[in-house]
Length: 480
Image (cartoon, rainbow, N blue to C red; front, side):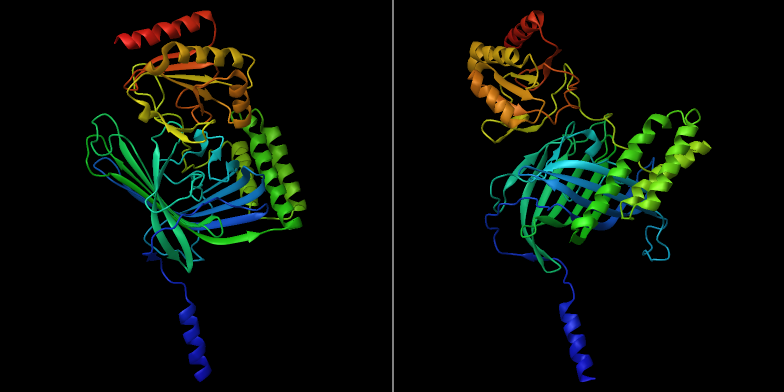
């Protein structure tokens, strides 16, 4: 009995403690996201969404599992496979049990690249978090971290193409289950959040990431998205997500190769059926052959957790052959509703890195004089002519206008070499994350803003007439 009491006391003492706030000041900390090849993170949590307006009322919740496997890395970037699995709960208020655990409602596998500062590359709208409904691809464990050392109350800004700039801040230290984490809070909201307009919805997103500086990965991430109906001051819809790090394991040798092979197969099968899905009746034989190939391959391949994505592809094939449609509870984020630059409207705000000074530049902070943005491809045969013309604008108008070269390719070494070879003195930024908001289907493209940030010219292509038109529009802006 004495031994039992002592053993029980030890168990109670060793139980995980709730999060506690550390009151000591934040010391300078240089954070970086670190994953070794073969390291896998598994986060599990709960997503809840509710709407309570005169038009829509509902409540639903999902169990969320996010796996992130590092496929390889170099000095500047990581290649990460992410598998997001959602399981809808029939009764949001009931506690889940093993016997009541539902089958997967949605599975999505993506292979992405990110920097060791947590910035996804390339930035496309497929990685945007939906403002309503559960996440199609959960990447909340990644937060873009600045290169400078963080101290208490430090703030920095990050961009999402077509959405408002997000402001991050250091909110101190907290201890989660015995792990000391730096608490980072990000706020992103529409300009009309405080004063809603009558013709559009307003929304606000709050991210909280508990980052473990020792391991280089977050211990927990949370997200809350609130939406207000037009002309309403209180939120009509709200979603919350909270995910905890459950495991961080390293898979060496064949264990890693099995996972990597199954991830590659899953992507190949999913991409392989796309050409046939629009007309499944016509390509029924082709789809059937793909289904049989999946079955055969699965018998030979060692199973891993990433097989769920292959199973979903097989299910899509079977349903397409039968003429059935999948019950999709997930609506992928589209470009509709994202802010796009157009003449007569305020230019979408962004934060972009200065390739030469290695610092961030925010567009809204350049208001006060006209801004000329010249989007170019550093690998284009026209690049020297475009950059020389841009330098001519800078020389001709001097401090009356802000000239920005915007590289649509994130190749700092190439851009720096071009700037030094031509002895160009204007600012050149990384514009690779602005393809949606500035409609960059081709380059060169020139966008002119007046001193208040209103788009006055959006010109695609290059030639003598184009160059003359740019000069005319700049002079018009000065005369207004």
